Length: 601
Image (cartoon, rainbow, N blue to C red):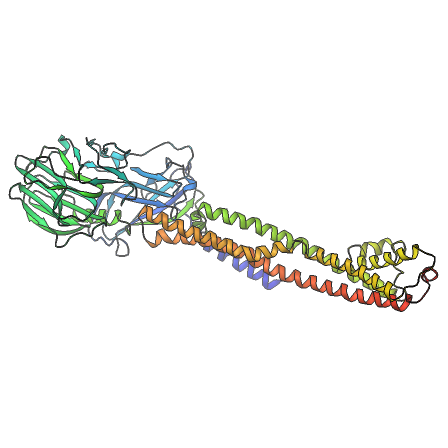
């Protein structure tokens, strides 16, 4: 026992260290029960951005693999984002939050994203009394003049998320789920999104400007416009020509053009951006600068068109056919580092945002096992619950069967001892002749029940006539009666053992079912959220494997218990078979051919 106790004392702190990481920093507000650390990583291990990005609306993608939706309000009302100091709230707004599918997209205003560093912020949740605190306009700096998330109702015109309220006056062909970020706008080639002119969208001659958007284009054969502005014979067009991104700026009859070297991949999301700083116009594809032209923007105070050209333009560009998501306009030239950060952080395989462990308000995190438990899906919990019931039943069976077998074994040994003490007369152990102490000792004995069945059969025969001789045929009948009792005793020993065999064979298969379904849901959630990285996949896969662990946890103890009980039961059965042979042999020796009535007297 001493080595076992020493091992337990050594193992306990190891487990505490494994499942309870270091204490957390001061808690922001006590009404929030949980928090998660989120790291904005621009180091080479992360997004690998060397230049300072500055203020940036960071996209936070939550899914069942990195967030426990069951601990938050069903609409995400209790979500709060706090700066690294654990004191300063950050502006944010929710684009989508679906706890049933286990996916959410949230925009958070991070005031200063430096290059080559890892910056932490906190996500707090778990307050059932919290009221909405989203601030869409505050999430973006005042230089953003138009942003569409396309999270509007079907048929409705897109609503601007900036403080300027540049809402569109026309709607696209439709809104589709599964875009690069939540919903996206679908363009059929016949519809465009037109936004009326406004002071915030006006561009002074030689002014600054930025356009960016995600597009997924169908195959095109001619020049199509993605974004266009025309006024007084001058133009600014961002589009595709034979699938090659380009920017046209200047006189509409002879604009200056910047074009990429190769076309974008059809039916694949591509980030396209264009900036003008008053002297140079730059075209970006997937966050990388692919060309510049020395030009100043003309002045514009006209409507803005997405997905096509301004009506009556010369020369006219065809309307865009495909999908678009997250178009943005700014009244300044955004730095290259921000455009690159936008492109890689909003794509499905972003390494800019890293999700840490969840922590309780007490200041101790759930640890690695806690991450797994929080990532378990509902279907896996159903399987684990069934396995839990199976485990309790199997443990109850093992406990009760072991207690019963131990009691029978002790009573059998006691009875055999008594029987051997009266070996001269096998029928001398009548119940009326046993002391109270002996009755307690042999009361649970299965061998005693065999003996009593044989003795009762002999006395029944004696009571039917004044004279009885136990011949060979009569002794065989008595053996048959005792054997029948032996069968019933074996059935009693085997009772409920089938529950252990079910646990042994069914537990791992049920666990495997939970794992397979959990893996399927994890990959489906990742596909829906578009966040493809190890931090998104690992928690979900680990949680899915918990069902297999639960199945093995049911099967392994049941297997050991079943084999132990089976061996003990076989030993008792063997003892009963030996007794039957000995009992019948002694009957033949003592009573065969004798007058039973006189012998019994």
